[in-house]
Each structure stands twice: as C-alpha cells, then as structure tokens.
Image (cartoon, rainbow, N blue to C red; front, side, top):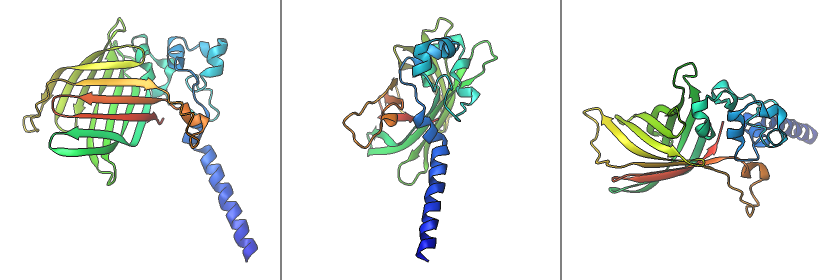
Length: 251
C-alpha cells in the first residue's frame, strides 16, 4: 500500500512540474529582455533582432525568441508604427495584486489591486494609437472598484502624448504630456461627466508612468529572472485624492 502511495506522489509531482514548466508565466520569467533599451531598439528597426549582436543577446522577449512563447500581434514590438515608438515600453499587460494605495479626505487609506493593458490598435488608420484599459479591485473581497478604457497616442513629431479615457464612474478625460526617458507626466486638459454622476472638485491631475527594473540583490527570496521583470510606477495626484501603485509586467 505504501509503495502505491509513493508512486502516486511521484506521479503528482511530475504532473505539477510539467504544468508549471509549460505555463506562459514560467516561460516569460525565463525569457526576459536584459536591457532597458530593447523595446526601442526593436520598435525602431525589427531587423536588429537578426543582425545586431547586442540585440540578439539581450532582447529575447522583444525579438520573440522565447522558446514556445508566442507574443500576440497586438503586443508585437515589431509592428509598432513610427509615431508610437517612444511609448512602446508601455505595450503589454501590467498587474499589481496588492500594491495600490489610495488616500481620500473622508476615508482611511486603503489598498487595492489593478491590472492595466496597453496594446496596439488602429494600425491601419491614419493616426495609430495604443488601446488602454484598466480594472481595479478591492484587495480582500476582490470586488470591482473602478474600470476605464481609452486610447494613448502621440503627435506626428513624436513629442506630445495624449490619453483619452472613459471611466466607469461616469467621467471622461483628455490628458496630455511629454515622454521623457521612459517617463510621462500628464496634465488634465478636459474633463466631462454624465449629469447624474458624483461631482468631484478635481482641478488638476498629474500622472507619472515610469518604466524601471528592480535589481533586489539583497533579497535572497527573489531569483535573477524575477529581478529582470519590468515594472511600471503610477502616481495620480489631484485636489481631491491621491494614489500610487507599482505594476509588474504580466503578459
């Protein structure tokens, strides 16, 4: 009887190993870009994936050289149009399960989870853009707190970034900013709402999107692959509230 149990345990362990090794997330962790410039290198000239040693060695994910991992076309850096190359670093799914912190004047600070998604859209139009969606949930009960969708694009000169957003709370916004070294600061230009939504006294909104990598060399619980997973820091400050969150690449 004990030998049968032992065989079953070995079989279960083997099945778990096969499932984990074949999961997209496991493959993603094993196939990461090793340099921050990879997104721009590949977006500017996809042929670098075949002819430049630096890109071949350091940009496996951007070049889609991951064994068994297929990047969907809407996240393919090789398809980024010229006007979006400077913001190509945002393309992908980004998630934080518990990292969000929000402050409001009438309630205590609370934490939340959120996933945001930037993908290529309107590639055949005269002015291509990135489709943007976000979904936030309460950390413990996992109920929806907020969702929004919109488009992110740049002008023909590749300097000004514009974000148009429609939100589940009845608001719609237009924000503009300048891309500066993997960072964007948006300023609110227009805001509208349905006539029966809550009228919040918002006068100014500042948003920062910063791509960076954390190399936690002193964290023995984090392996080298996890240290190389890109992260985005997001901060929103206005006259009524403030919140910030750090997302991890989760495509």
